[in-house]
Length: 521
Figure 1 (spheres, helix red, strand yellow):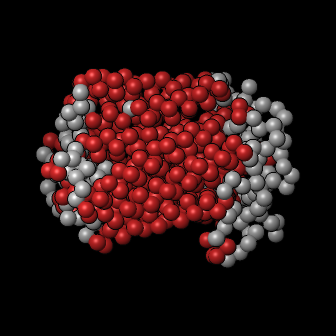
Figure 2 (cartoon, helix red, strand yellow):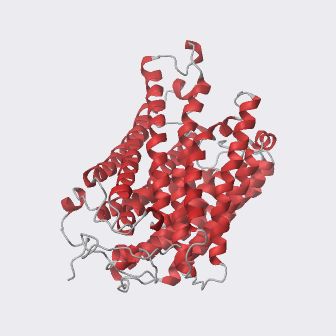
Figure 3 (cartoon, rainbow, N blue to C red):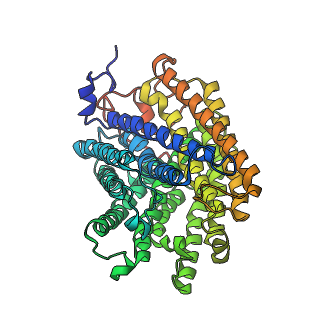
């Protein structure tokens, strides 16, 4: 049997103590997909409760807890670590011709931070649960008797996973590129991870400090956010969103990098305007630190602050539009091959465009005030996060699946799963734009009867999404063990990871690659 990273060492302990970036990437894969299942079950329970007016399968108190855990699991355990920690860990060193990441032990530690943090957060389910929503807004998160402290501490620990991964990627990109791999010869996926890593390192500590202050409020009653003690609950929102809006780009920038790889590979063309896409990624990362206030248009902040944040939020649309224009231009006159990864790339373009346009709408002050805290915001958020990040994860997973496991998936089942997920997503969330414009508030366990038909359509859509992921799960598990063996480069792609065997050897390349021709100009 040919030696590769999968069979280089055997036994569970060899995986739990591995320092191989490829194996750590697969550990993240198992972890992220497991939590995705948990968060998805919570989502289905929420939609079942909202299928009819009145109490259906749970009371309002339990609904609030399920809603909180759905958000916390999906944000902190799935979408934030999903592409950087899973696909990034596996692919980044291969794409720059490195043997591993700069700090292999710290890389493994980052996975354990995610596991421990997630365990502490989910432990709160057995300690009475928590009902604050995933944003933990004060003053309610100070006053409630639910298990806020273990949830917050779990998120705090998971933050170290994000910081360590970001630091590792920055150093790896700067120090371990193979000969000839200049910055402007790096694949766009690597650039997206580099931009993301900057946000992870700079923004995550702010969330960590904020959550520690919240724990201090509950334990020591120190009065930072408690107005009765002279504190300011709005200060919590400033701190929280200073991290959490850049976190949106931690979620979406890596997906954009995946889409760049897919569009180039399946159109058989180099990305149009490579450097423009690079600087757009860096521009999005930079502007992301200055737009947090658009979450607080109705919080009482000054009108001038609202105007500034409105303008800056619209400004984010410029580099984003550059990327979309360049992707479409790359497709023009390309030799398109509609395999499953490319379908997910096209799905990303359609869904993320809707999410982006509605984001610009929400940047307009009067419109935001009208739909604030309604299902319009829920729909926008999911079109960006699920329509963006999850499409990116799935497209990237199908794309690099042959490289990871050395086997091919069933193309028909891959396309069937995409159709169910894409149609189900739009059936689920597009009606929520209409519900939000009609005034239906989010985070409510019940609603009035005029909203029932569209809620029923939305719930049916959630079952379609679930069906698509079930098909994808069984198809990919079967392919891991029974799929046809893959060649080193089944897609005919040009980046370095396809120049080594599938699956790669433990050391990635039998001979260190040298890049002599710029593939992006």
